[in-house]
Every structure is written in structure tokens, then in C-alpha cells.
Length: 125
Length: 499
View 1 (cartoon, rainbow over the protein chains, first blue to last red):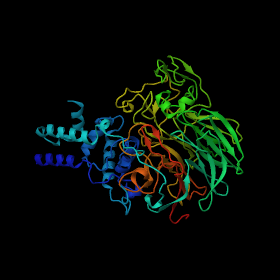
View 2: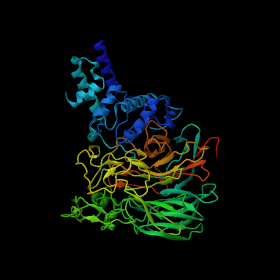
View 3: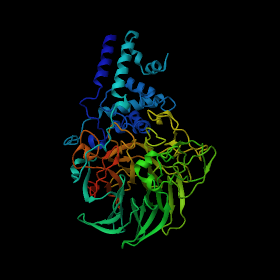
View 4: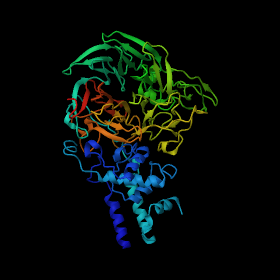
């Protein structure tokens, strides 16, 4: 069982490299993100306060895109807490544990909300 | 137990056995390094890195909007348009700037857009652009004249083209100019005034921009008396040093007081339509380019955040949407959206942390209503007021798009779109973007969609959103290369509403 967990973890890490998934998640491209889950709704606000500026809508900007990197939740939390490279870490005083849970729920919901509306991804490079 | 272990335990990583922890940590480190790290080694891939050359292709079907909205180009071939206004009959007017970064000078103009998109000149200016926007009030247009050559002005222009300056002598010779204007519910004319420099110190970046050579004694001016720490930086003049709020080559000392002025840098001011009673509303902004009143009558401003350039570079500063707090200092040059500039997150990767320039801060700066993407250049905005258009009370903000590499580095294009912002929560959602697998200006991603949205304003009935698209402006290491005759006015309506 432990080996299985280990293999799955590694597989998820490897598969999380940028691949064929598209990063775009804006309403004009994929339609509005359902936010019926209160945790996702709260997480969206946390994201707007701390993350959107470098990863707008989960796409790339100053920093890399997030939407095409299916990191497991615990790794997302780890990177948010510790930071990496030029990305700052966000300690408990900036994002408390409950808000971090909400944030991760939002990031994952956004990642899964990937089906484009007809014709929105076509026609360009 | 080190910080990493604590973080991982807190994240549930110890689902794995101790035997597997080390290899997993190595794999995690490798992954994070490859996917997110090595920022310094990754090239700049901002949106200005395109080989844009006229003629510009215009194709509204290349712009994606939320379901139920449609977009059309209603005027083309404009040179550096920056604003749109409506007279009392609802006729549409556009302002051409007359100046663009890249030291490109043309004639600033106010043009009426006819029914078939033909352009009729109403007024023109001299070599003192950029004209950055216009508003119509009680029979006249009010235009912000950027003032790069002779200082900023607010002009009153009649429909017959007679022009009179109601405010002049604004400090606009530097990086940023006189912005706006907008008419308040109180009948006053509100406008913004940008700063001379990136972060309070004149330096080599200003020489590169071109203005320091023609205005060597120009510098930032505070909105009230400030006391300096006395930090100095290398001057562009050999052997000299430069402090904050002084000309290049002039040193400052600890405790030195710089007098404040109403006509300050980084301020929002207001004046009566006849030019009387000029007042400072608030200051401590960097470049409050866009102003708009919410349906409740609150004043909001967009603000272009710090760049990673010059003597005092700042890394990772977003742009802002502020709910303007009257009488307050909003943080420039020592705070970034309510956070101290000394925080580690604003340290450029290869340079030291910026330190405070002011020995005492006028007040605790407020928090912004929203943080917009770094380098996206949040510019003109307006609030939806009509249920026919939808999203009543939300701000529609034009994101001009990054100007990398001059302003810093971006791994992907930032901006080049119109977003809507919920000012209550700060949540930002795309509204008008180019189609395709990647975001960016049309000249980079292909197609005939948006290049550089610089303003967004609703028609007087609130049923149509007009997007002012500045046109092609690619960048290289030497700066901007703006293309004349590539500006567009787009009109967005909701299907079932106005056609």
C-alpha cells in the first residue's frame, strides 16, 4: 500500500509538468466557474488578495501558470506556506489554515473548470 | 525539525513512510525547481515581445466575451487613442493622445465619431501631450493634457473647438502625466497626477525614457510636508548622488524636510469647472490613471504599481484599484498596496530590499479594493450602472498590458484585456480577452482582436461599454515602438439589449 502511495505521488509529480492542457480559465473562454461550494467562494477571495497578481486567473503572468499543473493539494499548501525561489511564502499570519484550505479548494476547482466554450481556443498560435 | 519538514508535515506529506520521505522530498524539490523555480534563468515572455507592424488586422470575432455579449469595432485607424466621452446627445468622441512612450510625438486631437465610423476633428493641441482622457459636462469637454513638454493642464474645450486651460503648471514632465478626468456627482472635475519617477528617486531609467535630458531639474513633489530618512542613490551624473523628492544629482540628509504642494506628484485633485478652488483630494499614488465614481458615489482610481527599474527597483508590485480615501496618503513611495515596501516579497531577485525613504509616514495607508496583475498597467475604468448590461456596481478595468522588458520581467503576457472587478471582494474576472490557447495582444497571439485596452467607459444610458484600444506598441530593450494609425474603439453590448 505504501509503495502504491509513493508511486502515485511520483506519478502525479511527473504528470504535473506543463503539458497539453491549456491554462485559460477566464469566463469568456470556459464560462463562469460555479461557486456553489462556500469553500470555493471563500477561496476565490483569498486568491484575489494574494495570488491573482502573479498568476492571474491561474494563468501565467509575472509567475508561471497554475491551471495546467495538477499538483496534489498538500503540495500546493506546502508551496504557499514555504514559497519557492522568487515566490514568497505566506505564513499563518497572512493566510490562516482555514483560508489556506479554501484557497486550495478554489485552485483545484479552477483547474478542473477547463472545458472551453465552442471556438474559444481555436484559430491562433 | 526544520521549516521544510514542518511545512510538509502540516501538509500531510507524512502519509508516506520515513523510508520514502527522502526520495519524495528529492522528487518534490526537483519538480518545484523545474516547474516554478529558476525564475532568473527563464526568459522574459511579456506581451510586448511581438513583431507588430501595421496595417493592423481588425476582426471582432477574435475577441472572446462572456456568453450573451457581442463586440464590434466602431472606429479604426486612430493614432494613440486614450479616452472616450459622450456629449449631451450621446454622440461619441475619442481623444488621441499626441504622445506615446517611445518619444513619439503626434498631434493630440478630440474627434467626433460619426455614425459610420468617420472621424471629425473638434479640437487639437500642441506639442504638450499626452491627452489622457476627456469628460463632458454642462456643454463642454474637459481634457487632461499630460504636459510632457510644458507641464500638465486641464483644458476646457467647447463643441466648437475653443480651448481654455482651467488648471496649468501640473508636474507632468516625468514618467507619468496628468490623467483623467471625470466629473463627480458634486459637479467638480476630478483628475489624477502621476509621479515623476518609479519610486521617488530620479535615476538612469528616467534618462532612458528620454525626459531627464529635456527636464534635468524635474523630480517628485509630495502632497504634504515630508521628512526624509536621507537615503541617497547613484546619480546619472558621475560622482554625484541623488536623494528622494529632489533633482538628479542632489543629495539629501537625514531629517531634511521637503515641502508639500497641492500640485503634487501621485495625487488626485479636483477643481470647479470654472477653474477655481483647486484642491488635493488624496495622494500617495504612483500613477492614478483611471478615475470613476461608483453608483453609490464613491471615487475609485486605478494605480500603476512600481516597476523593477531605476535606482530603487521594486519587484512584484501589483497594480491597484483604490477606493479613494479623502485626505489620506495611500502609500507611495514607501508602501505597496498597504504593505511596507521593505517586505521580502518586494526585493528584486538580484538587488537589495528597498528601504523607507520617509522618516515618518503621514498616516497608515489604506488597503486597496483590488490587486491587479503585476505589470498589467491597469488604466481606464468605469462602473456598470445598467441591469441591461449586467454586473451593476462592478468596475470594468482596461489592462493596457505589460511593457516588459523595460519595466521588469514577466514569464507570460500580463494584461491586454478588460476585466471586471467586484470592489467589495477584490475578485477579478476576465471580461474581454483574445481567443486562443494563450493570453496576449493580437500582434503576439494572432488574429485581429485586442492590442492594448487603455480605457473602458459606459455610454450615458449604461447599455454599451466602449473600449479604447491604444493600438500596437511592441517593446524591445530600448523601449516602446508604438505604431501610428493602429488604434481602435470597440463597442460591447449585451445581446437582447442595444444593438
